[in-house]
Length: 425
Image 1: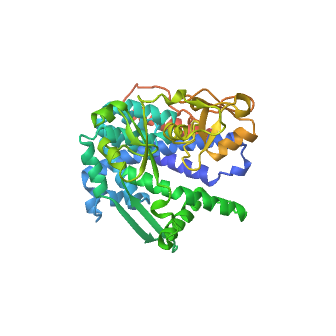
Image 2: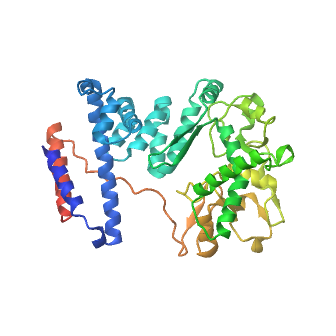
């Protein structure tokens, strides 16, 4: 009954919410509050749904599975419901994730990503929780790497992905045509590289016509242009430039022929691939491999303004996305001289960085600065203050472990209602 009171109070608050009357700071604080409430509500729903799934109550409701039951009750997709139930089922085995979920520190998506990866490698649980606190956008890539590294047979995993390759198409209810594909990382990398010149042409054409659209729109135009070029025989053929796939690999793994725990062998900005697959790529594409313990590319410098091909390859691997903390744009990155070339007259790899167009424009025209170095760049405002891209810390209630579970739950509900009433609605 206490939760019913909270629900009624929340309904009244949201119904009477007039955002246009709020100051920007007040609105930002409300976003943080509602985000925490949303996470807590998601945690409670997942835990309760786990009990429903275990009890088989859903069978009596005539549903095909617990996921179907939850999807219908929550108005969500079957996939989302299945992810919620899978996460809830793993929580008893992952105490750190369980505590973070119950404290409202993780969204449903973050909890699912961490639970899935920690299920493959329990020792990574604490590290993944730290990544979620510092930079939630980087969590998916980290979880993907943990699961790939935990695979007992990397070649078998790669063959399984290849066996499941597909390209599907369908129509949305509004009549839009849709495509969805699944590929091994090196194949996807080759496809994306093949699209790059057509994306650039689509971008130039849009600017010439005065259009400004998203990069996803330009990529859709590029795919059509690539298909037409192949149909009409205007794509360059065998004599045209070959695709380039950048791979970062540890020297020891390259020599040994396989990567061990903690070693890297992956497509830059993509997924992990077996070392034998990297070797086989030499027969199909132009491969640029940056060996981490090989040539010390950080010391390579030349007197020209534009980076050399060697430096560009190293940058593509070192900076697969915009180096500004919290920005994970990987499309249309531009190479920036951290210090103007006109002042240094030298182009060194450790003084170059890749920025998205938005942040590059801020640095060039609005006084923003990039300081530090590879791996620890700092993005500074024109006034010298550092831009903090980390999410706000979760709001935790004061520790109070006295009394029975029912008494603690009652105190938590009382505190929640009091907080709601203090908002003044």
